Length: 455
Image (tube, rainbow, N blue to C red; front, side, top):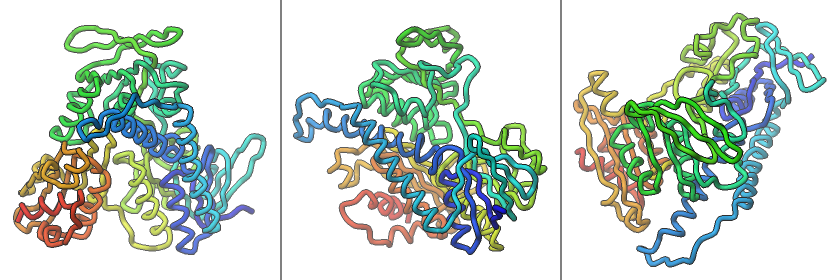
């Protein structure tokens, strides 16, 4: 009999982390994956998209560094080699995940899992069907791109996965949806030489980030020649042999734009259908998400759910965090989720990063705050890098100086936000950051300067 203390369905950044943590706590663990270890993030999401973004940055810097004295002839992009590099990066990470699972003596099963009852799943891999039993299960099945009825996926109407492996750099690209996926990929392809149009239904791109942050991204996109249309409604698409014509409505007028591809990035749908969850009595919300408590436990006590299939931002690091909490809860620990110090980042130009409260959220909750904003242009390292667009903003409670939020816009913001996440998680005050000696010249000094200005 294939029996486990804990069975994990899905081997993405939530599932494999949960499996490893459960094994570390003495549980016998089985993990089931239908497609590829590492999940969407490692294979067709976070990692390969950052390869394209990194290559785009390298090309842009190579061709636009005259003011630093770097004079080059025309830089050439070998797209075939870029794709090979991307595959090598993905392969190294996925192999690393497999070695970690094997090293922790986790049973890896390939196939599609279907819930039979509260303690049994059936796994189908082609003609091979196996039954597995368990005491507890962690659901980590992730999500997939939303497909619009008027933009059915095809050779020319593509999703984010397709966009990572195009046969060549498109001359023109239309992006439907100005969230973080659409804006990141749109910006990357603009750096790689495409003429990009972003069509967004809301009043601004990158919903969830402060307007002062997104304004700098809009400014950068304009410099790259990207046309951003907000308050627009995408109506439909006409496919041609080598391209598309997208129809949209903006400012009361119907307009069209031609491109080689239409990239649809309007959100992701949780993979909770076709799992047979009803067989175990697990309740599904209308949007397909699972309701969980602070230990990631579903309506059925021995089933836990993490990542994109529960409420909250669809972030790989959130899934990993929840995976650890679920594994520890199964082991009898009192671990619970606390999302205040979970950062959100966007790898645009410039990068955006936020953690904790922003001003509007603090105001909504009636928290009286002190806010300090420090310009990146005042940082020596940023000047050396010739990357001075952006700022650091710190938010502290006025009555006790406790840090409760931070936003960073600029070069390497995704990395420098980590210090503020630690500060908020540890209950530090602005004075603690100000008194911490930061190496010079580094970008990290920006948070120190902002904290000093707050005291």
